[in-house]
Length: 78
Image (cartoon, rainbow, N blue to C red; front, side):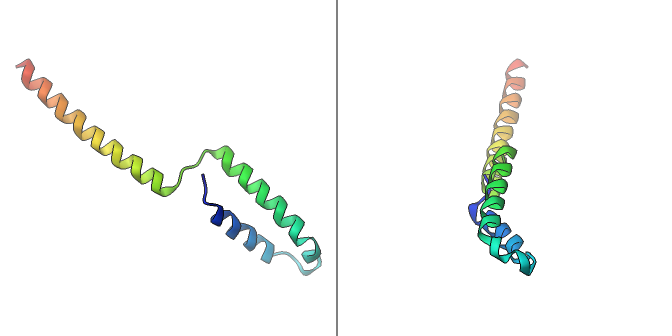
């Protein structure tokens, strides 16, 4: 999931862009935007960059092991 700090940064950015007449509604708008962003990102089933990098390394090691096993099987079949 997306880092809550990133969501907070987006909410603050949107909040700062509000026209002066809407500053009275700022807290309500922030709460609604925060909830909408959190729900949307939760539905997207995102992973962090760190999780992605870890899985990339796992996949790389798995491929290397598979290639070694394929080579070993080929040698045994000879």
